[in-house]
Amino acid sequence: MTRDDSDSVHALLLPRNGWVPNNPRLPVLVYSGAIAIQGEDPASAFEKTFADNGWPPQWRSTVFDYHHYHTQGHEVLGIACGEARLMIGGPDGQILMVSAGDVLLLPAGTGHCSLNASDDFLVVGAYPPGQHADIRRESPSEAQLQQIETLPFPATDPVQGRSGALTEHWTSQSSAG
Image (cartoon, rainbow, N blue to C red; front, side, top):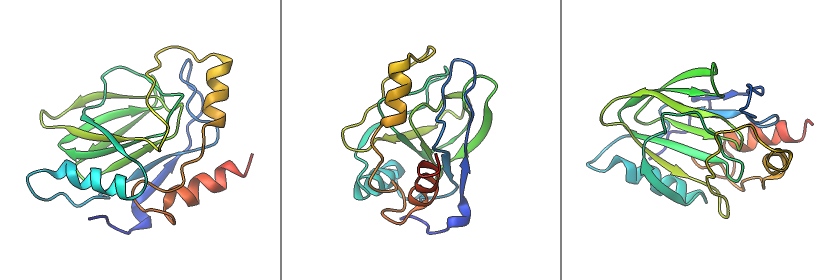
């Protein structure tokens, strides 16, 4: 069950941070309390929501405790259980506190890592069709920067569908430059 509360979605456009490229056009979207946590398998609500909105779920795990980014996929992270302090944007980036029910949408190139997490911290990860997470821990090549820049735009918001925050924030950003 998703909440339809556009006030609970915040956009963070992150500049390049040393070796972490971030995304020059597309902001990170933070959906606070987006999915109602209920039942014995709260991760299944994230998987269903993501799948229903065209983002096939790929894994259940945690967020790596080292800085990394992806060049071949936009990534959505659904916080199914627990809480964590994540750093977004690379070393000395922005610290985000996340907890069960929150969702983060990371455009390709966005650095992220877990600084610390509760023992029960569980995340569901998903990508648009045809995209995946290539783990990058070094400065990007020109070809990788081009990959980030030209990665196909997702057809739908992973939480809110066709008329969601992704369409509002990413469309206005991508057409601005």
